[in-house]
Image (tube, rainbow, N blue to C red; front, side):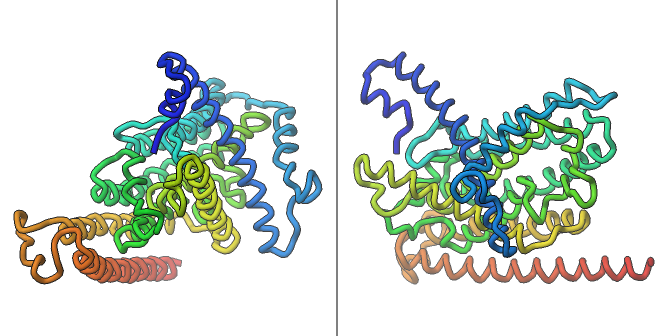
Amino acid sequence: MYDISHFLLSWTGQTWLVTLVGYILTTTMILVVGPVGMMLFTWIERRGIGLMQDRKGPNRVGPFGLLQPISEAIKTMTKEDITPVGADRWVHFLAPVVMMASTVLAFAVIPLGKLYPSQINVGVLFIIGVSALHTLGMLMAGWGSNNKFALLGGMRAAAQMISYEIPQVMSLVAIVMWVGSMRVADVINHQSNGGLNLNWHIFTPVGALAALVFFISSLAEGERTPFDIPEADSEIVAGYMTEYSGMKFAVFYLANYMTNLAICAVTAAMFLGGGNGPGTSIPYLGGLLAIIYLIIKVVLLFWFMVVIRATVPRLRVDQLMSFAWKFLLPLALFNIFAMGIWIAVTQWGADKGFGFLNDLVGQPGSLGRTLTAFAVTLVLNAIAVMGALALYRGRTRSYLAQQVTAA
């Protein structure tokens, strides 16, 4: 794999020019890919939900309604920008800026096929860290609006984001343990095996459980149904965005969908091989194929989000918090233990006390070791999931019984 700077250096040979042009191209790519992806996602979601609800969706502006997002962007840019009387004007103004900045920063280390905007040794940690700024933007919007519904939405957002960030991070800890690196490029390379795609992390019990916990937690982080409580229109008007209009509202909307785009891209990179696929090792053509494969994976993941929105009802606040702390977090923590077993069975030898496996199933790294680790972790994780489900259902029934008795 290579990044943009290496590509430019091979063509120009001038270091200073490569640095300048590389920064400009990288920034431009991030600021173009994000909004374009957002417009595509809004069209996919509205047409998709229309299809599932037996209606057409946007179909007037452009062929199949493809220009509808552009027309709506023009409309929001021309609408009046209103700041409520009594609002903290600076906090009210900066809230959408902070949310947009957190999303744009995350794209700095997310690869586009084999092109990396930047490569740092703690890329996974960087994505998690800058994503936390999203919560700050929501709190600023709720507090600065001088509106009780907005403040309630901001408080709900803070509680939700903090709760679901923990299982989200814990799910990635297992993958970082396996890869032995927090570089995004290393995570993707770890899933490459000549185009057969059998090394994708999701094809292992530990990787599949980590992907499940990460994706569900990310739905909550991106305020996707059934976790869209911070902006639930049926309960709190529009949550922390209640007092926003015009371009400020458009920036919130853009940041939200760009966050969903980033979630899908990170999920594809961590669990689905990123841009890996058949033919990606071919010179030049392989780079183009890697971009196409990544786009396909991202679109399919977002389509799964759309299906969930069209079919799953919104959770109550107590269900939301209980699901994070009593179901997802225990599974994420147990999966770290299962990943330790996977690493021990597949990689440890006689020097670490696992020499008895050499005679039983083969040397470290052999197919026998891998199959043994697969079977053991599959049984352990299956027991963990069933146990967590039983515990969660039991506590939910107990809570409902208490509410009925109190009533």
